[in-house]
Amino acid sequence: MSGFFVALSSIDDVKRFVDAASRCPCEVDVLSGRYVINAKSIMGLFSLDLSQPVQVEVHGTDAQRGAFQADVAAFRVDAGQ
Image (cartoon, rainbow, N blue to C red; front, side, top):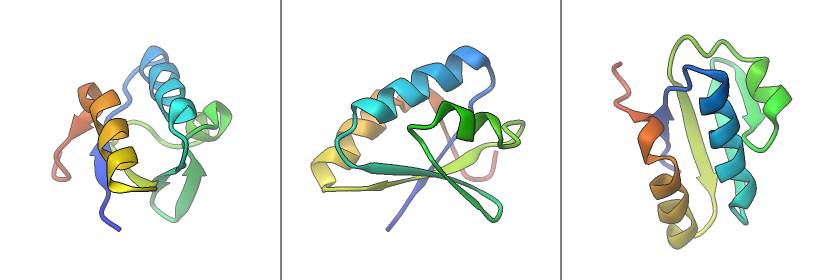
């Protein structure tokens, strides 16, 4: 399963990201170091160090993954950033 990286630099970014994940019919995980957090949990996301980009994995069909990536395109960054 390939993931992508997002940067969530404000409270509003986190809210918008969680809203997008909540609309997604499949599971979405956020990975930061050893931690795996449900992307639909705002409290879970706020427990992470969001000063660096975090990895996102969508566990669904290609269509679901594509739709979610389009929803959060504003937050996407390259892995090296």
